[in-house]
Image 1 (cartoon, rainbow, N blue to C red):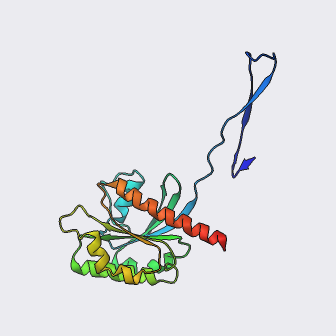
Image 2: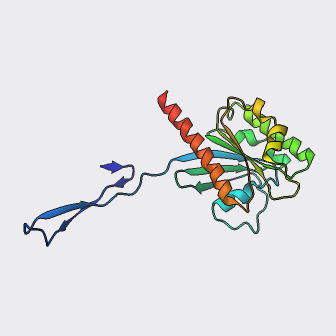
Image 3: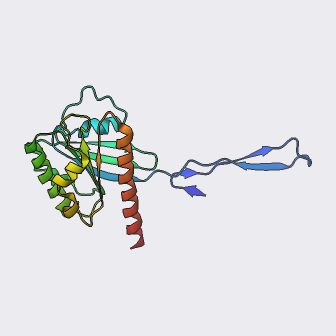
Length: 210
């Protein structure tokens, strides 16, 4: 039996205390588990929203010297039941206009916003999220929207973000999750990504039925 790149190896052991001398008992060890599915995900958001810090913490990397992403970076983020190949796009004004060039091939979207940002920046984030939700290459994909920096005094609640971003009417009929986040509580962040993986798996299954 062959499982992808792995093979099931069995070993035969001699049982000395069996009633019939010389009887050969065969014991099979379990082969390696099947490889985890991989999904390609694009991660967008304005500079300062905390994209890089969250992804670095998910990869157990140090966040002491985090600098804003210029261009893009790719991280393979491991989870128990899947691996997310996350393409993080820089959020500076000079880079945002090129985001759509990197959407092709994406299977899911992570949008990170600073819930404690100024009204002006929050309005820009709303515009960018609306644009992504309606983009032809992203509009049918699962979205994970993280209202980051929930630990800051000026942070808006998840409900306030949901209302301000008009997610109910805009994203009706789409697969999306809105959760609060902070780098100080990565368990919640992992749970949110777990929900995204569930949506990705569902979309895979739906595609398999067609």
